[in-house]
Length: 497
Ligand code: ADP
Ligand code: MG
Image (cartoon, rainbow, N blue to C red; front, side, top):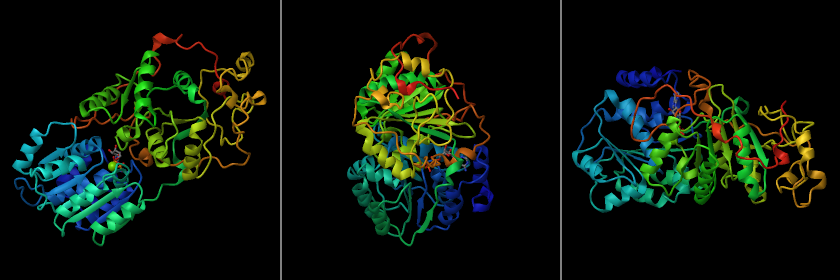
């Protein structure tokens, strides 16, 4: 299948080609012809499967006919976060460069003046977050009666963020005979209800998760104590050949504190979370993109859907509360033949969350630990590649006071003298190894990427053409080799296989 078979115009095909896409993704192949035929559509596919272009491309051709009118946008795209809205805007700029289309972005955290001016002049595409749109609508700055095409993107995220009532209100302001497209990674009941209410006879497209074993992500869970997380993280950052990493935490405060602590330890780390204003988030993303920082500490909301991929490592400093977030988080690593590594820290308080994650992905995530003999735990699957740089663990472990660090007691090695009887035993033999979750189905598509050149973060708003990836600085700054001299917790003693 190629783009030329989908019914798109020649001008559009040119800009698609210029952007470097050679083949439509499955959701694009299925959605684009239906959208061009003006059908309502529900598109369900995981994050990273190319849903954006599946509506942006046909919309550009649809909007090529017709005229702009003041205050009355011709189409509306709703996005849950400002970053996602900005990314969609970038897509319009990139693919719409051969078309005369005007677009306005209505998102929180940026000055409204220019956007209101743009609206007054008339726009073809309005991209908005629900809150800001409602705000403007209520102040009479915008009329939605000329809006014949509505896209509700990332609907499951909208639900998580409490936007469904706003979306219902917005839907009711649009003409009844409009075309409506809804995209989501999952279809929980409230989204189904929304679709039933506001879409008419939609075409339903669901792209199954691709076969499980073509993923390039090596996953591990790491047993830690709540207090041992920072130390465990610093150690892995230094020893696991980390070149670029995203570290996810569940709470904004953790994101802030962790970024600060990593900086104090000499790592080039930045942060992104929901309390930062737009310009601060953009600045931080840009630094990550430029390789000024090599570690980004992030919250789920701030990072969700952002086009930040191809990092060497993802760390789940906390096990995510929503199992879906696990899939989204680890999908930031492993692409184009490069193996990514994902570590999930599991403290006692994460027990329920990890159980939910393993239920969702349908298997146990192999434990990353210190067992010098076997090199892996009972529930580990095929021998994971081990990080280089650490010798065999026996000597070190012997020298170490058993369970001096609460973390050490978690490992098999320290288990015989464990003073923490409540701790889990190693899961029983025969437990299934995690079926890799194919979190990055596009890994193969852009195989033109050099294996070691991670895709750069796309910078919201400024639609700079992508440049060849600059090599990023290694996560571990040269100057701090003596930064951490404490005993190596048993579970981190890794045998080099
Ligand atoms: P989703 O909305 O499904 O999470 P996006 O639309 O953000 O996914 O796309 C994810 C990534 O895949 C982006 O980096 C995008 O540029 C890339 N991409 C999309 N379509 C294609 C394609 N046909 N070929 C190669 N890369 C693509
Ligand atoms: Mg998307």
